[in-house]
Amino acid sequence: MESRPANGDSDPNSNPVTNSVGPPSALTYLDPHYWDERFSSEEHYEWFKDYSHFQHLIKSNITTSSSVLELGCGNSQLCDELYKDGIVDITCIDLSSVAVEKMQTRLLSKGYKEIKVVQADMLDLPFDTECFDVVIEKGTMDVLFVDAGDPWNPREETVSKVMATLDGVHRVLKPDGIFISITFGQPHFRRPLFMDPKFNWSMEYNTFGDGFHYFFYILRKGNRHIEEKEEPEKHQNPPINMYQDELEGEDYLFRTSIDAEEN
Image (tube, rainbow, N blue to C red):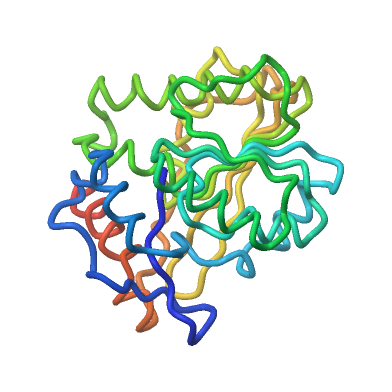
């Protein structure tokens, strides 16, 4: 999401929300004013678990010399964690001017002056062609699917926005760059979009999480093979066996919306 809400200071793996369990409807996530208001009062929230849960996957795919673009930084600390792991050439974007201003202030207070934060729309990336080694998003694209309708046959407007995002990502990636997407979206729903014939990247994924799985997709530009197929694979849904922090957190609210549409 081009956003994130506020974390407490207790268990680092918990995800409490300070103001509420979430918006009255998942469709609220599509309203830019909602995020401005939310960021005005919230300091930190991590959608889909914190960095420690997928750090090993990041380290396997990003080097300290990589130039990285983060889509929808919100008030996540993903860029902070990447920086602490030695990845300093980072550009973060968010649609919310409130999120951008607060992120800039926070990073400067920590001395992370190399990280750039820019107000921008992921549907229309304002960057040169082939200028990043890595583009990463964590929950940001999931917002585009809250009004998708049938997940097997999403609305035309949803597909248009998703493809605009993917077009931009593919364009700004260097010839051997990678796109990392951290999401609830299961492979049988994401593959037809990720593997559209216009893109020359390959697709692989890993999972992480305690109670149910989140997906860590890796799309490698210039690495697609002719024999790769676009049709969805057989896939069993991850077990829903959640811990208390997942039941109380907003991730679960969003997951339930997706599951309801699947059924």
